[in-house]
Image (cartoon, rainbow, N blue to C red; front, side):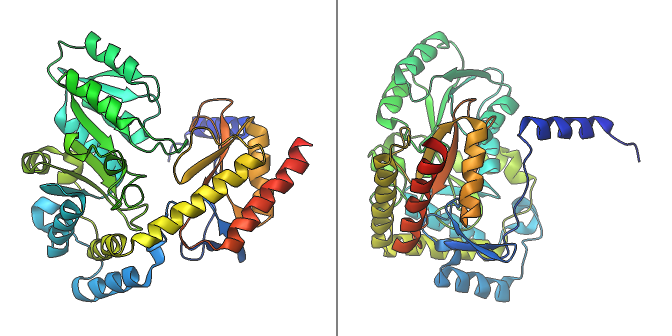
Length: 390
């Protein structure tokens, strides 16, 4: 086998620059407390926002599905992989979202790639928020459409860009609703107003908002009361819903179009039946137990206010994603290491995931965290102030 020597060199460069990434192996479920190397750590890094990944009703639903249907779907949806649980989950998602229809993808990443590349080509233009998720950016590049990037959460600059590209066949405006590294909200009402003025198609990525935001957990579009003005809405089952998979909801025509055109739907094996059953039950819980969401937001607010009172910079975060912005990359990783040594799992995020000099410790909470867990987290940040800033 030919040795790819350039790989060794590039890995060495990553190591020298402090950008080498290593995996931590968790040998427990995604609870508020996880086990790594036989030690227990409080996890403030999971997207299992509502704690549904380990909810007993969700686990029971998955177990029963395995007993009846086995482990895998064994084929793509258009060959023989569409099982009744796929159909039931798509109908359940459409009902939950209040839309005509839904389509399932194996992941949120493939949902964005399949949807975006199906809708536009070299005759069209895509307008992206500068901080959109990597899956949106990658999909835009794959589509071969013209790409225009507007400054973060800036409807005025979006308006100017749409004027410049007015002659393109289709104009597709795409934004995250909750930004995964900053925890801030896109100004959806203003973005939609601008897009509609220019007859642009509007696509919203609700990955970090699904199940969490809005009166019924339908996301930022529900929170802002703009659900009926969005053409294409994407969400995930892998975060607050606690499972795996991505979905898109919209008109029946949109969903039928994607079933026929989206390559990441057509050419991949379907989600395991157990994942579908678990997601159906998780959506039931989200609807049945709104108090879980309210208690969760009380916790999030308490933690953010506690950090701010200590003088930490949490940026424009107004959601469950709280960045503690340090700036210096080396210090950020030292702080993350200090937390880890104090049995708290909270990752340091640095370039290229975030811009240079904007490194941060990214905190996320779970509804299953206790008051004692929160006190321990805030106490650790008090110690960080004394150790790193005195």
